[in-house]
Amino acid sequence: MGYKVAIVGATGVVGREILSIMAERGFPADQVIALASRKSKGQDVYYGDTPIRVEDLEQYDFKGTDIAFFAAGGSVSEKFAPIAGKAGCVVIDNSSHFRMDEDVPLIVPEVNAEAISGYTAKNIIANPNCSTAQLVVALQPLHAEAKIKRVVVATYQSVSGAGNDAMDELFTQTRAIFVNDPVTPENFTKQIAFNVIPHIDRFMGNGDTKEEWKMASETAKIMGADIKLTATAVRVPVFVGHAEAVNVEFHEPITPGSARKLLREAPGCMVVDKREDGGYVTPLECVGDFATFISRIRKDETVEHGLNMWVVSDNLRKGAALNAVQIAETLINKHLSQ
Image 1 (cartoon, rainbow, N blue to C red):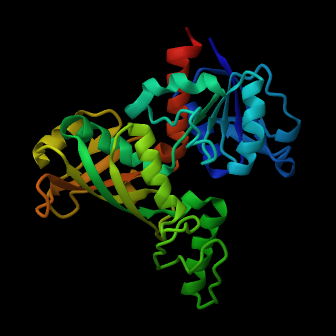
Image 2 (cartoon, rainbow, N blue to C red; image 1 turned 30 degrees about the vertical axis):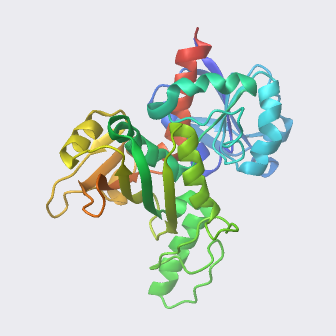
């Protein structure tokens, strides 16, 4: 059986990636609809090698559509996702708008696929923050073995996490520096080329940014565990690929060797951990790959039961588009095809 699928925000970075991944994975779609704002109406996007003409979201009737991927930002999701849900379409939303809604499951299929059954309350399923998705894929196998007590994570997040304009800004600033032109920040608070910025999303009352809050609150919701997590989120001058330096404290003993074995056997994980020059994965090498890569697994000597590790993933894939498509595949296999 094939499904009628809509992509909201089809002209954006994540929307295009969803189309690409659906084609790569042979998603069971009989009809694919590309939706965006009125200004993008009439443009072409590609589903594999097939061009699809973009339609106006404002004019689209979701009745008869089985699944809709939303990749157009929180304000669009806030307005149109409930409309789609009430029309009988199951929404998989990539924005942050519904993530902490008690009636909306927040899903990473390798971690909490069983929670997807909660979608029936609103016909909406939330896709987590890109930095959260790759983190919980690496944490869950270790938590099942030794029960995590506390996580300290510093992220190194690429500019693609902030969209097309942010990627253009990194390119433009880099070129300007080489030809001695002036550099003016527009999408970021400071120059991003040849720099790092410890600020993603808005500041909250306690001094954390919302990105850092998202990581803590989303991890708790996805893993359903009493895990203390503190994060520092940093934007770096990389086009695609998020990296994380992760320190984990456990309630029970766990060795680096057993952690490597668990992660090698875990779904979605790829361990590349040679203690030699180049024996680890960087963002450049993860681009275009489906896996979450884990390197630099070693004991933290400062606590009784602690490990350090380096976690890298393509944020446009596992952090956004791939996870959304995996959610849809899980939904079909467990619910829609029954």
